[in-house]
Image (tube, rainbow, N blue to C red; front, side, top):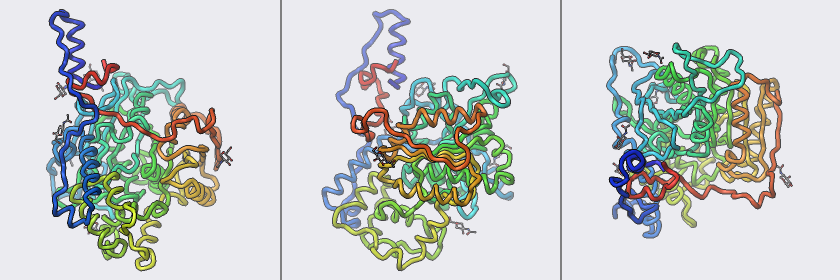
Length: 502
Ligand SMILES: *[C@@H]1O[C@H](CO)[C@@H](O)[C@H](O)[C@H]1NC(C)=O
Ligand SMILES: *[C@@H]1O[C@H](CO)[C@@H](O)[C@H](O)[C@H]1NC(C)=O
Ligand SMILES: *[C@@H]1O[C@H](CO)[C@@H](O)[C@H](O)[C@H]1NC(C)=O
Ligand SMILES: *[C@@H]1O[C@H](CO)[C@@H](O)[C@H](O)[C@H]1NC(C)=O
Ligand SMILES: *[C@@H]1O[C@H](CO)[C@@H](O)[C@H](O)[C@H]1NC(C)=O
Ligand SMILES: *[C@@H]1O[C@H](CO)[C@@H](O)[C@H](O)[C@H]1NC(C)=O
């Protein structure tokens, strides 16, 4: 479906003499890996892995690495930082560093008739240090036309309509450079949001979040991904939007809706909070184009998830925020050894699952919350919710979400509404849907919500309001979990796998 070379063969066969048409080679392989990684004996010993776990980790790493377009940030020259012009003046956030206007999508699995650009730009970490980061922009074939807009469609100097923008904040992809959605063949969230949005006519601006994509600053300092710190990633998102507008002033509409899911649901909510705090100051110009935010299944309570999942991931970077923190305050020696391995292999969520969630192995100290104050303090810094926000905000939550409990989101919504009785927050509860599948179940609703914002319509429900959504057919008839992924078939010998391609 996505093979340029297969496409060329077929285009050739239609335009030139059929006698010259040549069938491509066919190779038996549908999910083969483009990676042959294996843990070393010393890595297996140091992390106390059983042979079975070591094998599983190898398999997951080979799968993850096979999803990297162009070999990922380690190999793709796009991610190399350009030198600084002038090291005597202080670097500002929101500055464009590099534009890849045309990103060749041959090794991505983006839908036909979408186009990709990528940028490098500056953002800040939690303590205000300016650091580089990366982002993608997925372009529609044709910008979505609106029936009405308050000021008419945005046009450039040649009267060409600009593409309405969605600032898309992704859910957890990992913690290291190679987990940048901009280097993932499917931009990480694929059909669940970015593809759906681009196919609906929006330009999708997708920040990777600092630390994903680029892991070292100009001075060689590490850029740890400040995991689940909603305000830090919200700054990454807002600066990505500023830099994208600077990169594509004639193509990108300054009006935008922010939309995110899971970790990125917390970030989208964080964008609404940062704009409430700084929308008349630092982000004044950007805020003029802001139309609202959608927070899907948002992270609003860092430690409400499984400790074996969250504590090692947050703990890896916590010293950058609390310099006196020691990983040994949260993790057992086994947990520390596994975390060391996770860093060495740049493991993602799938590797983390294998390293931290083995039955009978304790990686987290049972007393982590008693012996150290850091968890409570981090939650207060990191969590979205309960603060002033710039509305309107649509919060979408399924009742059968295993990762973000419905009760947690409901409590955050209640607390936020109590603190902001005049705020426009609609809480859409979907009865019976799980974490990412809630996005699929509600696609027509959020697409309509976005359209209404661009068309300047009044909210259907103002103030704090709840909407309940139930399935059309009995719930047990629906496919409830995601069980497929977009598989790269972009080499000629696999073109038989994508008969719908050309
Ligand atoms: C396969 O992986 C290699 C090494 O990472 C990379 O350079 C290459 O681009 C990948 N091939 C495809 C088709 O993605
Ligand atoms: C470097 O200089 C160019 C040309 O003056 C400018 O457009 C760009 O913004 C500068 N980059 C940074 C990071 O300051
Ligand atoms: C994209 O990359 C492929 C593979 O390297 C190449 O064959 C093709 O010509 C490139 N497309 C464009 C438009 O540059
Ligand atoms: C407008 O059209 C002119 C002439 O075709 C072209 O040179 C210019 O780049 C266009 N500007 C934009 C913003 O597309
Ligand atoms: C900010 O954090 C970095 C590490 O991420 C640290 O090196 C630096 O000293 C911190 N700056 C301040 C002002 O806390
Ligand atoms: C979901 O639907 C079931 C069956 O109709 C009902 O019992 C339950 O209360 C609903 N849950 C919520 C949170 O509305």
